[in-house]
Structure formats: C-alpha cells, structure tokens
Amino acid sequence: MMAEHGAPVDLGRRSFLVAATAATVAAPVLLGLGCQSLASSQAAPPAPPLEYFEDAFGITSGDLDRVLRQALANGGDYSDLYFQHSQGTWIVMEDGKVNRAFTSVSLGMGVRVLKGEQTGYAFSQELSLPAMLEAAKAAASLANGGGQAPGARGLEVRPLRPRPRLDLYPQAQPWDQVGVPQRLELLRRVGGRMAASDGRVKKTLLQFHDGQSRVLLANSDGVLLSDLRPRTSLFASCVAEQNGRRESNYRDLTTRAGLEVYTPALLDDLADGAVKRTLELFEARPLGAGEMPCVLAPGSAGILLHEAIGHGLEADFNRRRVSTYAERLGQRVAGEQVTVVDDGTIPHAHGAINFDDEGGMSQRTVLVEKGVLRSYLHDRLSARWYKCDSTGSGRRQSFEYAPMPRMRATFMEAGPHDPAEIIASVKKGLYAVQFTNGQVNIGAGDFSFYVKSGYAIENGKLTHPVKDVNIIGNGPQALARISMVGNDPALATAGYMCGKLGQTVPVSQGLPTTLVSAINVGGTHG
Image 1 (cartoon, rainbow, N blue to C red):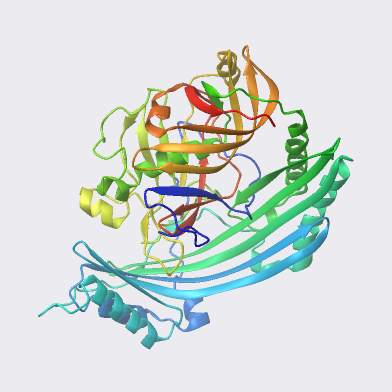
Image 2 (cartoon, rainbow, N blue to C red):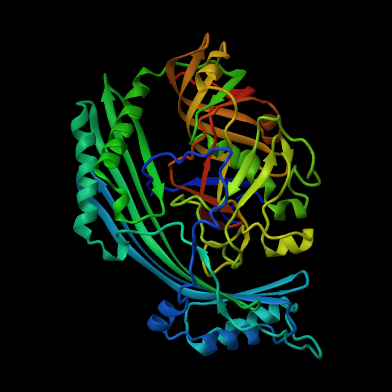
C-alpha cells in the first residue's frame, strides 16, 4: 500500500490526512438525536443524467448499454460504469501576494465487473466508444481470472432509467461562473485582517481551492444517475513573534458549496480565529505526562472518533477480520450514552453525497446505538457477503479506482450532560481542542494523535493553554472509557481527506463535549 504522496506505509496502519487546502462552512453543523435521513424530504426529481456528458463528449444511452453488455460478456454477475469530469483551481497567497496558482482537469471513466468473489476493474482516460469497450473487455477478463469462461453467457442488462436522488449541495454561485478577481478579493480580505489585527503577526499564508466534479453512473441493474459535486476550501494561517519566540497556527473551513458561502462575517471569523489560536500559544505552559482524564472539545475532536472507531466499522476490514470489531455485532462496545452515526445526508457537509459511487442512495446509518454495535458500513460487495443491504457507503477517489466501504460524516450524537458540568467533574486533566496527524492500527485499535492546541483542566476549570501534546490509546478501550457525553454535538468545519488503501475521499466528523475517563498523554515543555 502507498500513502498519498507515494511513501510506503505498513498495511496494518492507515493515516488520516488533513487537506492542506481545507474548505468552508458557515458554522458547525449541529446534530441532535432526532436527526433523520433526508432521503424523503430532499429527494430531487430525475434530472436528465446524460445531458452533460452527451453534450460535452457525445456519450449516448446506446453507448452505455453496449459497454455494459461487453463488460458482462464473460458471464459476470454485475457491472457499473463511472464517468467523471473534474476541474479545480488552487491559489496560494503569502503576505498579500500570490506566489502560486494553477488549475487542473481530470476526465475519464471506469468499468467494474463482479463475478462471484472476483472483481475486475479497468479505466480509460479517453471517452471514445472503442476505448470504453476495451476497458470493459479488460475488466471482464480480470473478473474471470485473466481469461474467458468456457460457454459463458452475458447477464441481461436492464434498461437504463434515471432515478430520483437527493439534492444536498445546491450552489447559488457555481465555481465555473466565478472569476479570478472574486477569488483574490476574498483572500485579500482574510490576509489583510490577519496582518492588521496584532503587531505580533509577522507572516500570513492562505491556501484556497475550489472545484467541481461531474459524475455519471450507470449499472447493469438499470440505474442511471448524475451528480455535480462542488467542493471549496480555505486554509488561513499566520506566524507571530513575541520576545524572539515564534508561533504559528491556523483555521480552515470546509463545505460543498459555491462562492456564496464566503460571507464577510465568515471570512472575518476565519481570520480572527487563526490569529487567536496563534497568539494563545505564547501563553502555553507544560502539561505533565501520564494517564489522565481527557475532555474532547465539540466538533474537531471528532477526528478521534473517526480514527479510533470509524475505520474499524468499515465492513471490508471486518469481513477480512482485520478489525477489532469483527464478530461483535449486537455486542456492547461502549456505555449507554454513546450513539455513533455515519450520515451522508447532511446538507453541504464535506462528507455529503447524493448517492454513493456505485449508485446506492445516501443515507443515515446508526453504527453504535446506546453502546451496542448495530451495523458496519457496507458497499455492494460486503453487503452481498453479509447478506444485508448496502448502507450507501461505496466510495472511490476517482474513476481510476474501484469503490470500497468508506465513511461519510461520522459523529457521536448528543448526550445528557451540560459541557460545563463535564469540565467541572475533572480535577486534573486535558481539554483537547485541535487535532492533527492521527494514526490508527485497525487490527489492534491502537491510535496516536497530535493535539495542536488545548487547555489544562485544574480543579474543574480551564486554566492555561497547552500545546504540542500527544495522546496515545486504544480505540475500543477509549470508547469503553467514555463516561460523560455533552448535549452540544457539532461537526468539525476543517477539511479532512481520509486515506485508505491508496485512495482519499472527503469526509466529515464530529462529536459533543466528551469525557474519556483516562487516556495516556505525552506532555511537553513548549
């Protein structure tokens, strides 16, 4: 397995990648126990799915039918076609000046064939019919072990029909209608506000990204769907100096939306937050190492839930018995206050999807209900093996990859406690606010996290800031040690890209204020 940047990593470990160009949302998304799937309330009427790809590239329904039939000519059980046209813009501004800017375009299609337990996958960066048919032949051959089954008969391909889908990320100002001056204007506002906010601020750095991906999916079950998936990110950081000492910190925001999300109030909040986090580090004092209670702040601390628990509940890891949660469905894995949900239907969330990358409708999946493990995250393959329905969790990085079970927006639901009550219950411990660079060993459930910022808790009160703290633990053990859950659930606004087996996908995560009764903390003398 290779990491995102090509570095080899141990197959038993995976890393959670924080996107350098994160993105934006107007405020933390609040989630309550009454949160339900939006499938019924936000279903969109069938749009003409082929319209864009037919107009731009000449793809017709007859072409799709021919490629699907070719894919199943060797006797496959199922096939799907995944078309993608992605465009993006990146701008880096340092101290008010643009020092890098570029655009990217990606175009192609992939063919997947399933035959029993075998999967064949091939892709083409050319959308001509001959090229697509060659990809279909290659995928069929791979699914058949490299050859053609004697006497194989192709499975009947059902007529393709547009299906209703959700409409979770409408745009008022789509990125393909936004000019470069509009992008630069919002960056100058953020950078200028950071630079003028305090004399100690010496450098500012902004990393901006916007893009959209047009997707067309057709499969042998007759499903025909299309989507326009926007994504935008804004990462704001600064360096400050005081008495010869330098510190830096950042704020980043994430959403699936158009230019309209960047209101003046949001941009100012982003700039002020980055400066505040940076200047607080001058007041940071050591935190003694050892096992202690840890209060996880709402929102961004959800990275702990994602890493320590979420990946262990993806069905492929459990099917292969790599996960520590294999064979534990129906068993108690946490206290009654703990309900963990993975939801792809939260409007404009980074992990939102109108449908998954094999045509399954996005939905809300309860993974842990009042401490009891209820479900894994399934794609078509794992659902077939477990004899259950897909949870709409089959996702892929791009047309170059086959889908696999992945998280969307993973969070813990509200508990009964007031956040102040939780902090007051701790005599000495850590209040962890900002996390980066998490790692987890899915087999054993062991994890480690870097806490970029947080506070010491002394006699039930938040006192001095701390920094450069590591927390180390075990996912199932930490889950079992959750003793208090707050009534203030929130999704993180940061832009996280989750890595697994060489693929990255956008995700969201969150939780309420949460007390883990004991966790190993590595102290610092920064």
